[in-house]
Amino acid sequence: MNLPDIKIIKFLKEHHVLTLATCTDNKPWCAHCFYVLLEDEMGLVFTSDIETRHIREALANCYVSGSIVLETTIAGKIQGIQFEGKLRILDNHLSDKGNMAYLKRFPRTILMNTTLWFLELSHIKMTDNRLGLGNKLIWRNSTK
Image (cartoon, rainbow, N blue to C red):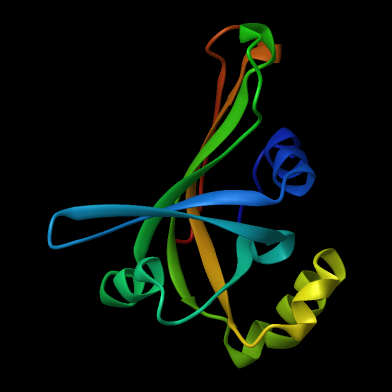
């Protein structure tokens, strides 16, 4: 797998809340989730109850999109990521690694009775105005 630009990896590691967008029956929905990056797999691990609307919709249509942004009112500092990917339950192959990474970043979640999910990223567009207004970095998973 080709790895994204280091600026994309750094941004994903520095932040911890994603907005996940789903759609079924032509009705869009979004949800905010705490996440952790599994860099070697280029995927995001997050926790969510299986009965939530966004998870029910992702189970019906596993192709999702979303964003991660830096909040600022200064145009020259705007940074953000838009992504596409495929969502699945965190499987046995990644279970230990995903659990450990998530609990390390969010230790209080050990008390929660919830499900861990893996969002395998397939496309990322990063806007980084620090590199020039409107500057975009694009990454696509070449194996998908």
